[in-house]
Length: 207
Image (cartoon, one colour):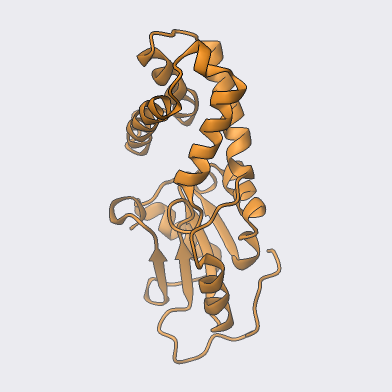
């Protein structure tokens, strides 16, 4: 377990909740900004302005559409994680009448390697986490992202030091909002439903 940023060794008795579980993407880590930056770099590196379309905004809009659709299908168990990773690029290229699977897979690999190096978090993220830590709460991360990718995000953004437990859907073999991942998380931190709370941005996907 990593050393936490903390001043209090005990949880104050008056606190109703002891364990605070945070979502990562769209809650602490600014996924939209970081992802768009990555796609912009890929658009330039692969010279897509001459190979696909001169408009980055058009390319990103179509990519975003397919990414949302495929994530929804993945969360429902209709496709595998590997399909999700590369087919969002593949479907984007197909919309421009480019049936190049190798290009789609190469772009996907570049995206997955570049994305976790981005560090933009939402305003006041560090102030809030510092405040909660100083108050004595135990902070944990509960995310539907990929294990390696999410841990690299935490390192790049300097968020990792705040969390006692980092639980991903890949490591727990389940996904929010399924009961199994919450059971896994509570067991990992020795918590109970009565003294734990989940903090996220999406009622359907996080709770």
